[in-house]
Image (tube, rainbow, N blue to C red):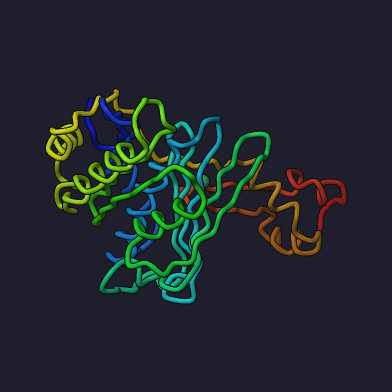
Length: 287
Ligand SMILES: [Zn+2]
């Protein structure tokens, strides 16, 4: 199986550390092609997408992870979500032509919200200020604040591909002194730190993992495919429409007698006529 558009889990043989590696290509292109994004925004969307996939592997139940940043810089909003079955979608809003020296400048000083949504409407959200130079560092500080287990991220992206690596300490399973446990974690991070953006983006993950960790071998699991996927539906669009005041619904319906709603995330179009819209269906012709 190809490693493009896949997430790969690995475990250290001799340490309580797990890892995850992801490479996105087609799934990312599906996000990028929806709007006319600058190369800086494409790179940031790629990092968000890789990060969302890596974090979604922490989901123990069916649900999704939403990574969303708001800022008063070039981008008002950037959002990528990934479901537990590895469907990703995302969008950026603001000055879509903005070019910055580094992708993070697009949202510098803003806030990053990480939302974990489980089915049955269980929702947990954590927020971190975007003060770091990279998204990976922002995520490192978020996990440092919120989780007891050490977690580190490495992310890279260009207009073609995005890739990421995550290491996470597991609850202690081995009989060993605490300082040995910390030292193993420290070593694994130092080794991961030697990876370059070029290697992350270009090397097949098993090759990269072997190159980084050959002295502390890891067991690599089968890759899981990642794909673009949107959760929009005709029913959800109709629900959104139904929340508008009746007069506004009637105005939208207008002379043409139908309302078309476009999904900004996947491009799907949903068309409704008067009889589809509950508030208007019974009032007869508006005009
Ligand atoms: Zn959609």
